[in-house]
Image 1 (cartoon, rainbow, N blue to C red):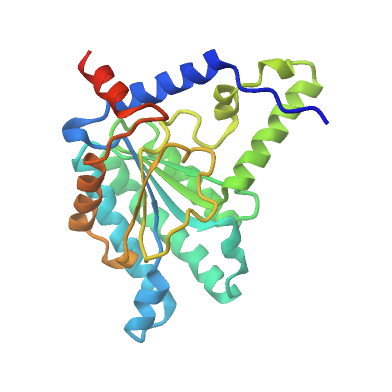
Image 2: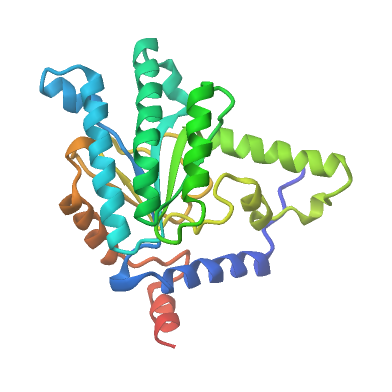
Length: 270
């Protein structure tokens, strides 16, 4: 049985150089350029208050609005929110139906506000299984905010990391089969171009609320060097103070990307 070839040293070094360069060009006050959030705990928030689960989801929308506003004020470049995963279809049908209706209503109500606040909205994920009205609202909201130059707000809806990698592999395979792509030219950078966030820096910080400590099939390709922050705070209670605590924690970390601490310090001071 033949062994797998070792990665090309020059290619690996170049990747680490780019990763470290991204880290040294973070925003003001050592803020992350890209924050991703798994918004977990809305159902439990409602249950603790003896409310229907849907009340928790509505409260979660209010929390999301506050975090979008806070990230825009802090001049964070990209905010990605995990709104509905590929696996969430297994929830009770009535809850799924209410969530789809909630997403539609929020897009209809908030698209103009996003435009006025200079937020550019993008939705990533498998759209074919969404209902016609929701797909229409997504397209309209994206078009309405397309020219905005402030915060880039990415909503992951009907998204899964494995789905993302699968659709990228299929697209690459189609080009190889058509003779438009040499398999030897497939690199991590090329794969990036076929994934759902082709024009975004990789997330610098992943926040998960609700006390769970897993990534749950979210951006699994993109999170290889992302700093992970877990909090017991349930999503509807996650406010600007909670965000500040996560950002402060991030600012104290040293991101090495496989290098030693001494190398990182030397690179930043040279």
